[in-house]
Length: 234
Image (cartoon, rainbow, N blue to C red):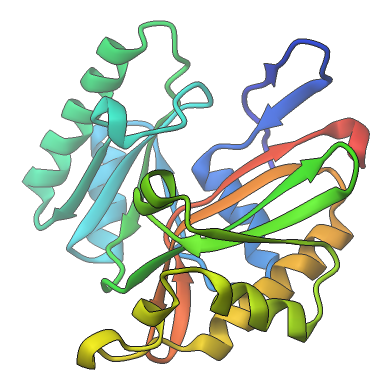
């Protein structure tokens, strides 16, 4: 796997930020279902990949320096034709360059649109004192607005996973609020356990976010992923 880009903080080791394409390739071995992303470095390649995957398609900017892709106009969803993909590629790259002229733009990721579901986040960070800590909560922009999340130390057991899912304030949304169909709670618990085992076997992971993960009636699907590696943690 090719690793692109690095960030460093004051007093910290050099950290390697994986692109979305690389992050998804990396985390798929966890057993959590992931929407595969394909890197396209030209309009022609983006159109070819989208045509092969089938429409509607989603395009996202790929750059180690651009983390919040939507904030810079780096995301286009629901593209229904080759012409829309062609225009979206040009618009995304132009918007990203305008927002961050020094960013190293590798291209765009092309992926099939996932069916909509309830958005949750699965994440992990390294605590200086306690080590790896898992996070679960409502996903999308809601995690930043509501900060409705639960934390547990790695390794998790089944009881920990059950508690994490049920202690967030948004749990009624997952459990079928006001007649809405409940999501697959067991699949969310299993995903947390899988992530815990994945982190145990990959101590080089410094940060990991899967946001959003779509929760469905019969399973889950990670739509986006971000991984930061610390080579000294391996």
